[in-house]
Picture 1 (tube, rainbow, N blue to C red):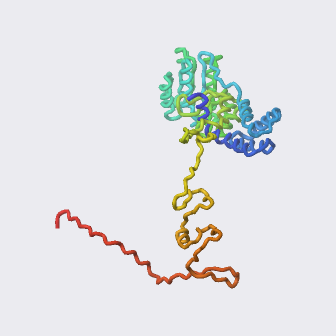
Picture 2: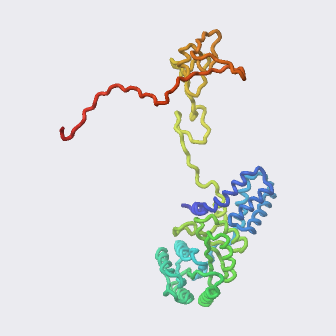
Picture 3: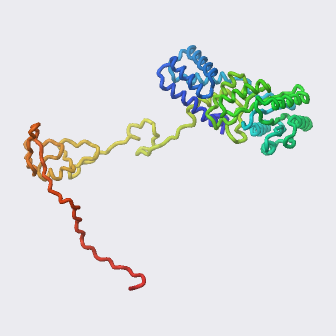
Length: 433
């Protein structure tokens, strides 16, 4: 699966939630007017884009439409895609040029920090860099064992202490091991913490001081891992962590399982933070580097995969459903059949002039010499009277009507018809009589 296919498949729920509804709304308009922009802004807000960012996007879209003189609503989606791509443009690459460079991964509990570290280590190793991991999350149970499993999968070394050890000491030993082994990148896991926990935020400050003392002038990336399923709450987390820890980039995880992927837009617009990676699956290679143009294209890609083509077998060869049939091939025709001896006409066709039709009522009418039911008798044709009571005129309307006398029923059930005598079957005795 290609790079774009992974992003497009991972953004399916977000695409259905945002661009799917926007497309339906745009198709209901015949011209571009202010009402269209108001409904567009409302749909963006409902897609976790945020009020400020939605207002900014619609304002930029107005300017683009005005400059190009667009009047057809069908062209709105293309301009909206360009506006989103322009908004997301920025420095989305990792700055890890020095040897060694440090990547510090932070975030609240349950967002996928440890999994992100394992996938990132595997990606950097495939790029030819030597990576070492530091298990500085000594607070959560089984966090060290989980990171150890990911280190084995990625094939990189891991520096760890016991549970409850000082995280800053783990980082110190990891830096010393990286210097001794000549590693290119150090990736440190940290314990999940909330921005309002002062002691945990002070712990991050202590780790930062250790890194600055042991590796002065090195490239350092502080990546905040956010769960896309939290929506606007992820924006608030990013704002608070930015003030406390000096974030340099965002890793947005679990995009494949939530329709709230629009949270990428306010993170970039309101906080100015670049999204470095996005998680679009559970496999090792499902952590993809963020690309603004590819993300916008996948977000508004309504075509998706090619539709399934169904073929119909025709006398002149197969024909695809939805194609215009040729002059003869693919067309459905009803062959005319000659009138049978009984005077019947094929089902679905009007009877020809003078052709006799056989109906349920004709059996009695034809024997009596009358014309079939529903047809006018021919001029001069002799008609035999129908046996039955003569019509009587109604005293109120003067319209003749027929009163049929039905034989009186005795209230009993009809007698069953006599069945012909059947030969009595011989009974089979398995053990004789």
